[in-house]
Amino acid sequence: MPVVREFRLPDLGEGLTGAEVVRWMVEVGEVIAVDQPVVEVETAKAVVEVPCPYGGVVTARYGAEGEEIAVGAPLVTVAVGPSEGGATEAPDGPGAVAAEVERPLVGFGVAEPGRGGRRRRVGAGAAAGGAAVSAPVASVAPVGPVAPAVPVAPAGPAVVPVISPLVRRLAREQGVDLAALAGSGPDGLIMRADVERAVAARVAAPVPAGPAVRDAVVPLRGLRKAVAEKLSRSHREIPAATCWVDADATELMALRRQLNATPGPKVSVLALLARICTVALARFPELNSSVTEDGSGIVRHPAVHLGFAAQGERGLVVPVVRDAQDRSTEQLGEELGRLTEAARSGALTPAELTGGTFTLNNYGVFGVDGSTPILNHPEAAMLGVGRIVAKPWVHQGELSVREVTQLSFTFDHRVCDGGTAGGFLRFVADCVEQPGMLLRQL
Image (tube, rainbow, N blue to C red; front, side, top):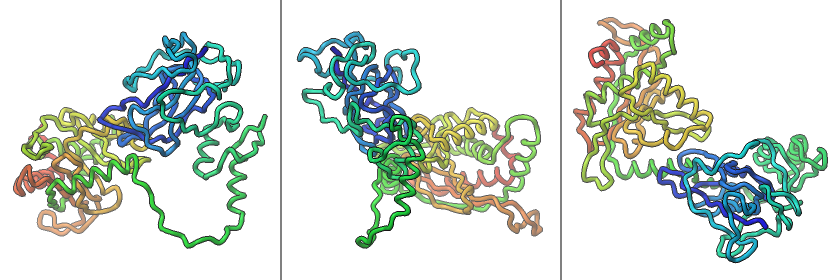
């Protein structure tokens, strides 16, 4: 007889206490392999796939898409054979639940050969993980003090006949109930065309008169909730001040063109600004710091973990370049490029989004000149860079057209006074205007 094993949401690290179900990757009644991802969840840091340490038949799923699941709460139950993962019959007899002790997210079990592709669904008498199941899956249910399951799809033959995850995604995005569709594919399989016809029919149908449209309330959750909480805390706790200056970036842009005219990786403006920041922080180390939780002291950070604002599919995120002070301009450019691409594809890990000590915010990419941003708590400072645009400028006593940018510097007034902040910003502006100054610092 199979034993039903319960898999709970593991500790995802970085002090996270829960996660939101984004997408179930398995159905009730499906055969899964050891370490197969069963659900995609969104934490305050990233979207991750959660693998299950058991192989067998999924008998229940806990939580609907969009629902928050606490760390340690049940995710799925799996019917496994007596030899699967060392499972033994529970003292209460067949069907009892053997609770899983929490383990780290990475490295569950040993991957089985032949993973990937679509798994078959199991009913009465079918094999599950190599063990015969003597009863239908629907009769294998967890008992005892376990929270009731919230299956999205019922077990057994009531499973919606759709294979393609693209079809499921299209239906989810368009609000189409797959259970209400009759599939046109083999054995009633629901195809993409079936979903598109349902969408077209809904659009063509007359809209009945209804009550007046009310304001929509969008819940704060996942990344947006984490950002809101962090910015609110920063605004409450940090007495921030901002100063700014216009700088002639003509020579900096000329230097970039010279560097990119030679063989090797291309150097971005952001990489040059990152190099200027690391040099400036070596000169003004009090700005690479943070105030302690109780406000009784200032922590000086020996390494510059440089955060930078990047637009990703989940919104604006701040990836972190570790030990930026030890990287060359070329190496900074490569790491900035890698993290930017990961942000766009939503592949950043929680570790790549935490631990920053100073932030570089290039809001010029949005076509704006200036900003007074909220500090990235608990960091003490942020350099903002506006767009670089041709403007009339007095250069060497004559009016000419130059490439000008506005630099803004927001800082925690507890860690320094205005003289230090002004000195930092003026040094940065001087390096932008005369990039040869960097040679003195390298």
